[in-house]
Length: 130
Image: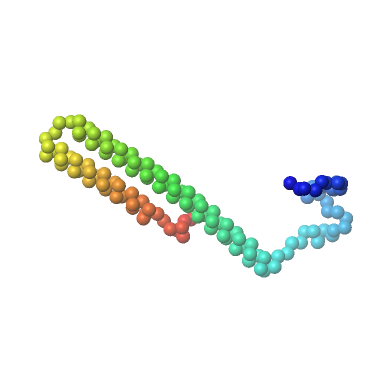
């Protein structure tokens, strides 16, 4: 907000951009736009940088969604293993059978937990994104 008060307002001639040009400007002058080679190179570099940034953002978002889905599936699998363990504890098995089943389930859970580290190794580098 400005600290000084506005003392007067000057009228402005509002007109559509697509209407006829004022009399003082020749038609050829108004339509001509020119850029230097340096300006064009700068614009190309800017567009390239913005495009790469957008592609990286889209790729990161897709990868984040994929990792979230895989993590949710792993959490569900571990919860189901926990349910199986509770059912085994409630059932009456021989001690040797229960120990063998516990060992198999513990091994499966360990492989799932260890496999979470492989989620990040399977990601594609940014250069491979479309």
